[in-house]
Amino acid sequence: VWAGRLIKWKHPEFCLDAAKKLIADGLDFEINIIGNGEMEEELKKGIEEEKLGSYVKMLGSMPPEKVRNYMEESEIYLFTSDRGEGWGVVLNEAMNSGCAVVASYSTGSVPFVVKDKQNGLIYKNDNVDDFYSQLKYLLSNKKETERIGRNAYESITNMWNPKVAAERLYKFTDAYLNGED
Image (cartoon, rainbow, N blue to C red; front, side):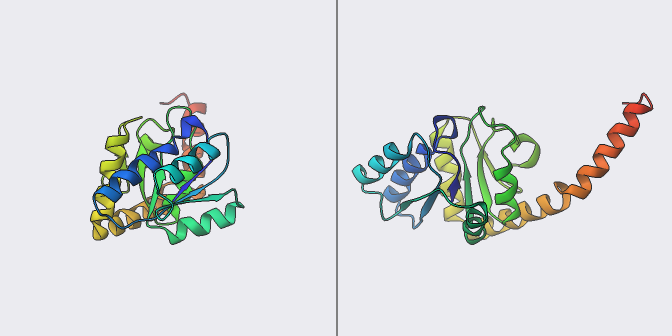
């Protein structure tokens, strides 16, 4: 699944580029793209021209709880934003849903939250070939996809939760007020 505004710096077109290669490699998959925006017609046209309709679905905009349902039913989340993305809370949501993520290194939260090959796969920014390679790896290795998805869930629930955030904020403010590093 891929979810977000369909705009240039979120690179939803990577889904179409990867789909063409995955089809050529004979892999079985479906990519659901959730969202709308300025690239919507371009993507729909690309799906039609490249005959990707059996593999790539444009689902439009939907309420957050429905997006979350798609994440929970998916094995893999595609996080293709570049440096234009802030933290990108959708990554936390996808990992909390147990998705193995394929994410660009340059996206806000990725260097902090994703540990490559442990709880997600990281690809080089703006490199569609690297993105494709990581996605193909997951699609070709079901057990690895499941392991990474479980680790993603555990890392969010154990390390990136409100309780841990509050403890870290307390420690930071206490150290700051006491002139400590």
